[in-house]
Image 1: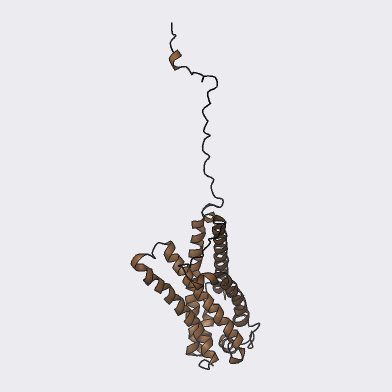
Image 2: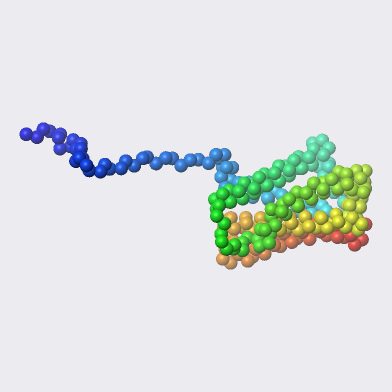
Length: 257
């Protein structure tokens, strides 16, 4: 007689039969440390935001430099406005200091995001391709990003010592901004103008590559928009380069004096 429930009881496998493998439970995917900023998308966002802030600064800085073509008074008034903007609500030069600190933070974050993203991409692909493909994002600009960034950084330091603080400028701290500009790019100081030109060209290449990479990341550079957007990146970069080079070249040839 069969007892009730024996049909559902667990039956041991026959002797010598292989045991069924036990599948371990799947571990939950590990979360990347650092939250959003620790992810690649977060660091790309940091690069985009800081890059946009730096581009706006370059546009404003170029427009201010071009006031040198309107004479000493126009350029000196522009320099005075930078030191007094926000008054009387803010003390003298406080607004300019806030902008300078913000720019410094933007530069540091931009460099941090670029370096960490490059290292992460290198670790993800430890074996290099046998055949190097030409990048579609920037050609020569891609290969000069690393060394161009170093040149730009060195130039910014010298540029501040020269035209902002007057430490290495012939006019010194007591000279007006216009006098420091003219004496800083005097023909006998051609090497300063050459260094300035190289740095500005590097900025243009960096900007073109950054704009084009942003268009690609957003998925805009495809189909009919490919060539127009590439032209936009080149045009914006070229306008900024020519705008920044116009003043030192004009000083060199005697148009601004």
